[in-house]
Image 1 (cartoon, rainbow, N blue to C red):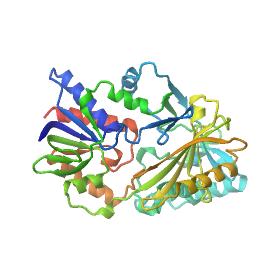
Image 2 (cartoon, helix red, strand yellow):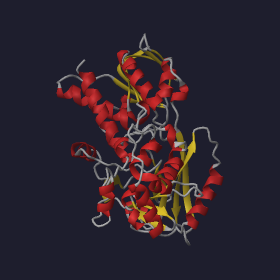
Image 3 (tube, one colour):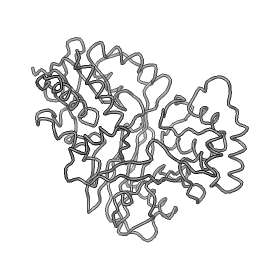
Image 4 (cartoon, rainbow, N blue to C red):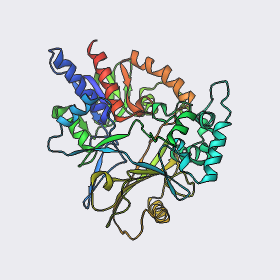
Length: 427
């Protein structure tokens, strides 16, 4: 039986970052390289951070744009991408509402709506019921903060399309710091002095796609660190032995970015499966023979009659001469998706919205992300709070958006695993 010090499940950003941080901790302490093995079920590293190059177009599995708040992390990655142009882009994003393009975030730009829509939103904002007790759900939080006018026109229909669930199921803090909160003063002030700054006001993107960040994370790792095409099947938690699709592996510490519900099944840990739910997202990457709209990077679509909730323009990020789109459709985790039929619905919707005019589709790609967005609920939060310390006591550490069942950025995953590596290295 093979044996390693650190067994890492998942060769995405979280797993590969952890392997790098563990090696750096050892080097800084003057110790030899730690014994690390990263398992990846797929035949390619990267998780959802993969790139497809087809017929002159560069697409990701979905829009993976990096929003760095820690310059040292960004610099460290860029040092490992020699020769790769990395564009820094100031975001331009909009909401398509009743034929108008409203600046994002919607709640700070209601003055751009048609007059009657604007008055209704302002009235509902002013006379909203803020309540005294804490809100019980994400939807209730939205209505208490911003009134039903704003919620009914954008926040509720858009997020229902994205999450593919009743927003009353989600925890009030389901989006954490990523939800663009605004109070009445912010909204009124924005009418005269626009300030639409957000956590992702600027972002970076390599000319070769998001996979370049994965290549950067792989650059310093010894070749034998990552085992591709090897799936974790079960774990003897007490014996600290993992069974994979190829072998048995003893370990001292196991770190996994796999979805938490999948981890719990592999560990044989008792839990209520219904406490963990999620959506899936069908992503279409579409390449056309001519240019389309300029000056926009992505756009949100709350209209329930359209299949997609978001459309992004790769060509406006990369400065390419042909329109290159990603289009996202949210669905329940049990939905059966007919890709060909959905593609035709998407093309019809893009024509209706005049995103496509006389351009012809010349290349396309699709992928289903399952899971895509986890549903953060009071029950899932309670289970995470109960289970993570229990697993840590057994030498198992879930990490990342899916491992910790949370909403976070790619940089957050790198910071989380850096802190975990420092903790593990002290033991």
